[in-house]
Amino acid sequence: MVLANNVTALLQGVPATTLDQVENILKPLDLTDDRYRKVMDLLKQNLDEGLHPDTHANANVKCFPTYVRSVPDGSENGDFLALDLGGTNFRVLLINLNGMEVTMESKIYIIPQHIMLGSGDQLFDHIADCIFKFMCDHKLHDRTLPLGFTFSFPCRQIGLNRAILTTWTKGFKCDGVEGRDIVELLHAAIQRRGDMKNVHCLAVINDTVGALMSCAHSDRNCAIGLILGTGTNACYIEELSSVKTWDGDNNDPKQVLINTEWGAFGNHGCLDFILTDFDRSVDKHSINPGKQIYEKMISGMYMGEIARLAIERLRKHNLLFEGEGSYHLSTRGRFYTKYVSEIEGDDVDNFTVTKQIFDELELASHTEQDCRLVRHVCSLVSKRAAYLASAGIACLLNKMARKEATVGVDGSLYRFHPFFHDLMMKKISQLIRPNLSFKLILSHDGSGKGAALVAAVAARLEKKEQEAQQPRSEIEINQIQTMKSSSLED
Image (tube, rainbow, N blue to C red; front, side, top):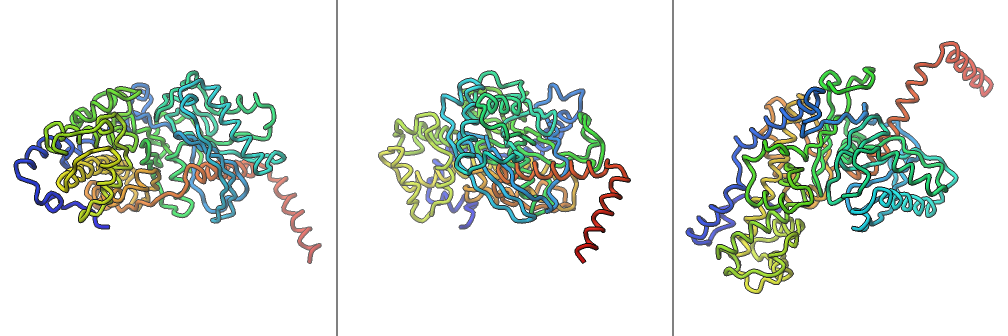
């Protein structure tokens, strides 16, 4: 499949007068490199504000330390439970680590809308119920397993297994959770059941950390975790000397993974210079107006709606569908982000998939010109999203200044959009310093495998620290006993 970046070829045959009107309406979606570089500069400024105690409280990009200090080294072993909550689905996983080998069993459970908008106790009771069902199915009641919890919402971590929810996103609005430790809420729900006393959370992470850890298991150069799905966020490895908010120890390794929470970039208005009328409408009608501005221009939750608003604007100017719309096209949220991906991946010689989507939207009359123009809209919306994400990644790559760095990427938008990877590779290459090199790699099941790896690395480092603190005489006794055992075997 070839990236359809030749706009002239795509719009061939469209009358010049029509094209002029179309471009006039869509021009705000087509940003210059100067604009993307300004976004990078602003993000760098926001990152610095998040990392400094004097400015952290009012910073949009919070840059929370995750207390994850090390990536996997391949020696992690054992069985682990993992929980994954980051959208309308909740997963429970049983993961076995044996060096570089990983095996997983998992089950997906739905979180109903009334629970997403209900009380915190309802949510965590539902999660505890799902864990119990999973443990019953896998006969795990007689085992005590370390648990890693991927909780993909903005949190301020105060320890590896302590995280305070700062704000709900992605359609969740449960009462009584913001400002509280989600691990405590999970443990309280487990205790209310009274039949899962062997479940204890060792580490809580978000999906960006999971993506980084999962990728780092096979690529030790991985230094950034990126999520491009329902929402967007990134984490990266930062030197402790740059984390002025750090309150942990200064032992080796002198680094920590930083959860940027960059979705909130622009909340104070610094990105207003690139917002379009479409973006303002999306924000106005969202459940969190004025928040997650950067995320709303990039992520899968909003991309389809931005495209719908642009398509509707063209239609109302009689530039699409002969000015005739439909109930579906005029309904907020009805033009799904998957339509954007499917239309962009369609064959421009026949537009078979595009026409099927038009039929689903009950658009009575549509021509090949309509197909080409809608494809153009989708391409502009996708390209802007990919380039804005690229500006963020380029900013982090420049900040870390590693000669070689891998970005572990996860999320449905990146996975299923036909050109997102290619668009990002192109733009990041143009925006980073010339002496730096990078790779974008799909991170496989970071939310599950990554949570288990964090728990495993934590267990490995804890054991290493205990051994380091062990009295010398005790170590010598253990060595003598080992030597005696070996000689007896001989």
